[in-house]
Image (tube, rainbow, N blue to C red; front, side, top):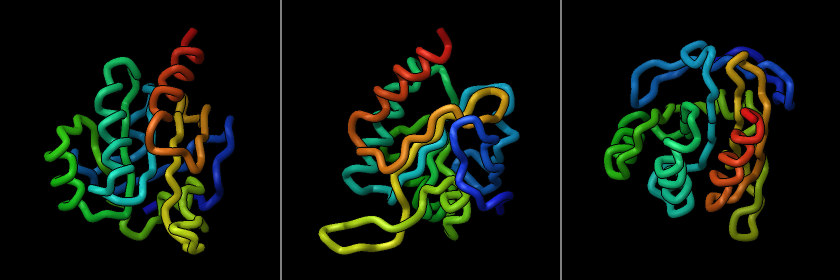
Length: 157
């Protein structure tokens, strides 16, 4: 499903990805020449993930970038989540977490005091030339969309 298994840093080429989404098959090449926000989240229908998805939905016009959400949920669950919350951007099914691993959005974290391994809420801003210009790792669901919007404005200025 995926090319290199290295974690991208700012200035690196974004790892290629390919997978099924709520808009059909998608790859990094589909977004060549456009700004892309690729965000990784743990699970559809959870409070934090719903907040984050709705924040992206609401900010989409002012972001002036394509947005793709990625989680390990299956495509049918993504479709239900997108429909229920009116999400106008694709959700990519990464059931084996290969895409998340390639972006460093999978690893150890603490949940309710227990150390577990799983998806890490992370957001990547990819420039039209395919390079990573922002890598926000282990972000909080609420508020980071606005910080990302401001960063996009700075980069375009």
